[in-house]
Length: 106
Image 1 (cartoon, helix red, strand yellow):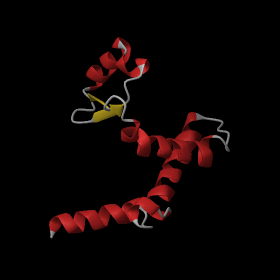
Image 2: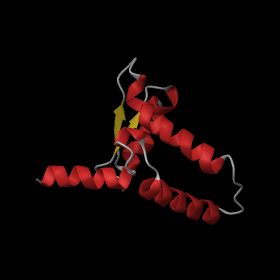
Image 3: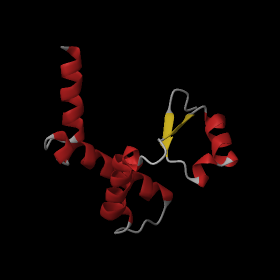
């Protein structure tokens, strides 16, 4: 179950469709549409997906679903631990999260 998880999406027909909304309800996830005419709300997610495609999915072929699954796990680890992102002041996502948690704890 995905209880407590909100799925952020734009207001495209695929996301507002009855089939998609029923699937969210079945999984226990909440629908979280972005604001109309505010595409920047999806910018970070869209850029992340583009990076994933450019760095992994468009450059490698996978023989099995398990091979793809493992490649995604490896890529996610590399991204979170080693990629330095300007929006995080050139820290990796994991480093930025740790710093944020330390600030919130103080």
